[in-house]
Length: 245
Image (cartoon, rainbow, N blue to C red; front, side):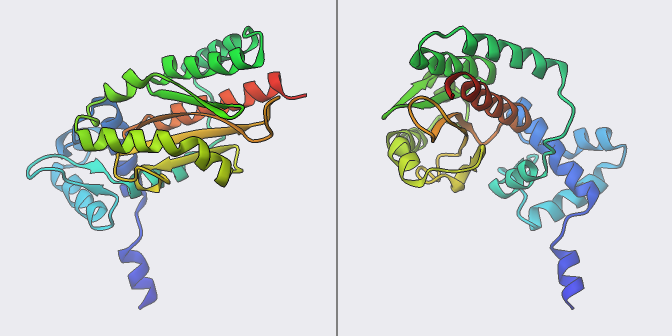
């Protein structure tokens, strides 16, 4: 009985690949992903894709925002995708260029505060999200227009939720002190503003200000997670190399 239950509540390899495709396609186009597009990508019939989508929806990984529309990932779907990312994947050429740009801005910063600000501003440019970092007892924020220019943040309620998250982020970081080199809080996992539809990706680094300083980005849950997580992790590593003796 247990094995039957597990099969009913587990994902097949093809379903995992379909979920990955939905996450990545939705991040790119910001509109629900339909079965016809995926059928071409996986070289199977639309009916097969619709059946797989129905299972993924039953398991809670995707949802259909409107009748007859395609599917979008849920927070659970994003979490599965993020957990399934492999840190040992080869670095692509575009990532190498971004890494070099980040390193140059950090190493050319001068005083510690300017170095951290440069790193945040570079993350804003490269990810098109809001960038943030703790500098001493302050939270430096850049790129608000990027965040609120995203199609997800059109309602005043979502904007208020994001503002509440930002207002409380610095004291929350002090109190909680996330201890992993990279932390990803997706949608409802966020400590504040759970219904804002936002993801917080932060990296801890040691600096002249504190052994628990943070840099990261805040953006919609619709993210290019692989690229953004790589950049935030690299930003933390670069800052620690420059600022910590």
